[in-house]
Length: 339
Length: 271
Image (cartoon, rainbow over all chains, first blue to last red; front, side, top):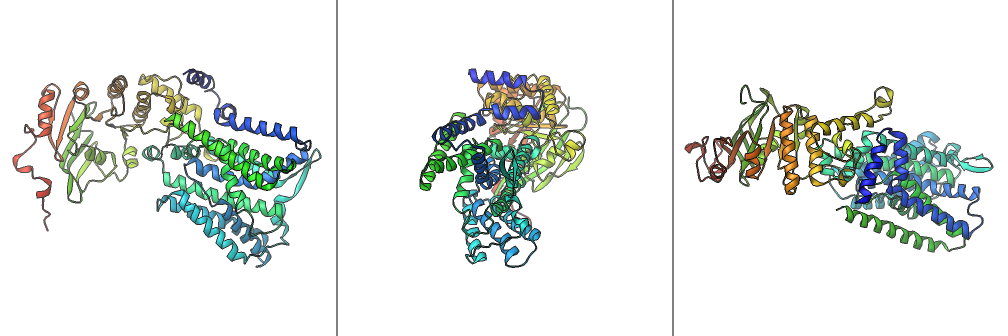
């Protein structure tokens, strides 16, 4: 009872300004507070365990490692906000990455068209997912499990299990570094942060964003208020595909090869983990892309920190698994309380 | 009160689902400034009639006129564009969004100039202001317009749905069992709201099972039976039990002709 009244008065005071206020509210709101505390605790723990952890150079490395998953997780957030899920993002990204590198290296296609075709392949898969979910009315889980396998197979068929190297410089741009105060950053990190800013804007400051939330919150109510729910869903899956394509470009920039075995397990699951750890509800309609950025940072910090303190890679999977189940349990408990 | 042409009018509406005839040549008239209740037993065709009027389904035969003009609603959106808003019984609101966002859902306001046109920036302040005004006019008490709808009581949630319909309905507001999901006290609040919507000059079509509410609120009552309009009564002309008798077929309604009551299965298609 008391919490509701304080919430009410707090929002009453703040109904004046809009954009600046939404940022404050997003950070102060309960959905971000939890992930933020988890992030700070994780950082404190690894800082205590390893001297190297808090070094600017190491934190920059974390960002570089988070970059690909971070971009995938933007698309995943959009899909999960509509109460769907996209299991295919990782293998779709792998396929996009093979398409762009193979075209550039083996087929002599100029770098820009090759890049574009790779990204468009991913967008195509996103639209296929969205089309099957809206037109054939299949559950997102099954559809994207199917396209996961199709993209996986195509990746290996198209590449003939070959790794493409010797890439043109255009494809490597986002892996390039620049330094601020002696710390190296890549352009890929900048692009990721820009994409987060754009996604935040679109979700919180435009009608389309509201419709994404409304579709996940109560699809029938959204339809009855005149929202074209199928179009919203199609846009969300299409954008998830686009994020897969951009993530493919970032991955190529970072690894400097087109690798058919890239991104098939960790990136896929990590994108969902980031969203869930970031406080976005799997039931749809609740969450934020800022939370996802924090979630992606938590995933990255655990992977990096555990490596720094000498924990074997396999235990990282164990820890991520436990984290996801904890986060989903909180989500479930909160959902039950709302009913 | 019934002076002039009907705002919304239907003639001979027929809707079949395979062998089942849900609407069997039903008529309908709604006049300016009135609350018209539509009552009938389950399967009498009242919700089919309402769905036809609100664009949720298309009748197989018959015609609908809005302010004297022929209309064909293919979707609920068509009806809404024509100024007919519907409130559904199952609290069709988006719980995680705030009140102002719900009022403007699907019809958001954007900032003027390039911010709105190019960047699609929402004008949240204007929407909050307008929603606040709407709530004040309808005397709906809520703590704050920026409160998430899920923190509201059932009555307040339905208040949000009614306020949305009243805000956007230019000609007609249809309420399909608006109190079915509510408790006694909350029902009272929503019924008061229905009256206030009429006071604003919007005619209301009220579908309800609850006879006391119907007799308390309605100016006229259309009684449906077997897919037809069998009588139009007023709370003054008939008692509740007389209305129920017509509804169940115990008494013949004024508009019921002996020859014109074939049972749905007897109907044969010519040709």
